[in-house]
Image 1 (cartoon, rainbow, N blue to C red):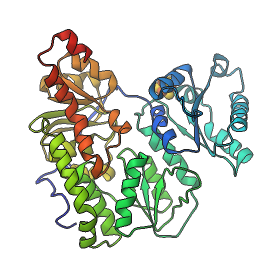
Image 2: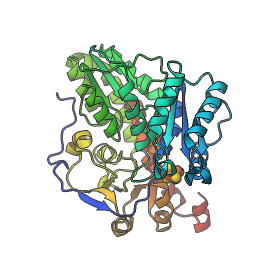
Image 3: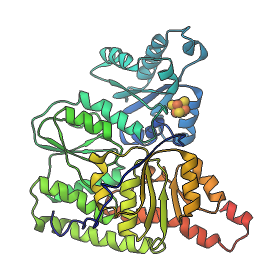
Image 4: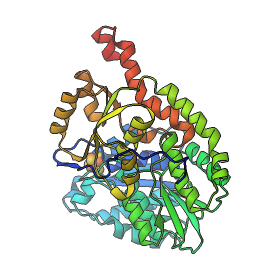
Length: 433
Ligand code: SF4
């Protein structure tokens, strides 16, 4: 690394003892990932094999699609299926047949497991193999689990991408694979930066269409876009690809450090790096400074939810002037978030997993200026007078790279600004805000 890389904290958090908790958790399930994955993969369909609860979760989280044919649905397991009275496999085959006959635009079909399908041990991998034999090569049928048993909501994307890796065609070409479902606007900006470096053998997983030439092999290097892609990372390594560990591209410093790792791997000179990144870096710094005005000097507490907590704590403490009290994450993969832990100054409690009552006690005692948490915890904490930010918004909103750095800071400053604005209003108006 050269002088363009962020200076590591004098003592980072990589060696900080982790507080491990295994109690009651408050998180969404992995079906949530379908909401952003179906937008990214334009020829994919997600068929959840689950209950009415699963169908309601998807409907309420994704809303009703009025512009196009939906690209997700739930095959509902009825009581007879759950009691083993029907052959769920036969019914699934019939549903898939009807769906594919009606929707010739579908090229990738994901059978998505749920808590009920796992409880009755419905073998969706067998179903996917059987259906692939029937519908290949026109349609590729894969399966993964979005069940909420012992998982958190971002693991749905990880499981989906990991399911795709074994069927990617092999290659010996030297390629860069960018892994993680980025909003198109961020992906386009990324391609512009990487093409500016002169790197042109770049592939994205997931791609917008099955037609994209995504391959993998021993000369593939890959960079993760999200810290929750542990299973996908392992699946790619099993195919011989090499991971490029880097801080995640949130904020100006994170983006610069992430790009620098790729630039070093592809022997991009400092001059080219500087020429490509200088203008967007300056824009990002200015945008962050403006958006983060009311974050400076404030404290933040992260409940474990999205797995983005460690990179975001690094961004908020280094680039927005905040102090982290606790940084909780559902899982901590040192091989993935280690570079962010190096840049996060020693001080906060680093916790993994959750015992929600104990953690609520710690948050209430610390009275942070801002608490980042799941939807279920936001209302009780707001009722206690704490400002909250829903972690799930950080996954739905474009936040990667330079041009989004100001928006990212703005997502955190908005709850504080709103609180400042309503401070003088009556409690009833404040509740309605
Ligand atoms: S997969 Fe499990 S946690 Fe998710 S909606 Fe269905 S039943 Fe609920």
